[in-house]
Image (cartoon, rainbow, N blue to C red):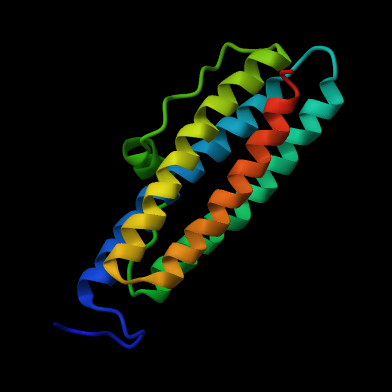
Length: 157
């Protein structure tokens, strides 16, 4: 069993790179959906929702960058072009005909729940493969996604 410089087996490294690129594609697609909502939201509480989308976007970007950089640390290639993300993302396509704040919040929340579930699965997959550091990275991304989802869903109460 080959071990690389990080002390990871080749299987752990390859598994982590695959999971990181898969979740990277989802995170980039989710980022684009959040910006679509941010740019087009209207209605009561406009400024609060508009600013909330900006905050959620910024929080997500931290994890996008960490995922891409971790791929590089593992000697992989981070794949984040628009064309590749459009093909690779497993998230449902975001509708472009929404304007009401509640509709945007519901649509973003639906995608965040899906993203969060897939990130949690990636925690287990990378941990079981032997890469605790990547599992920890995904744990941080999951924690942020859960908190941001809670903030957004609170607007629907």
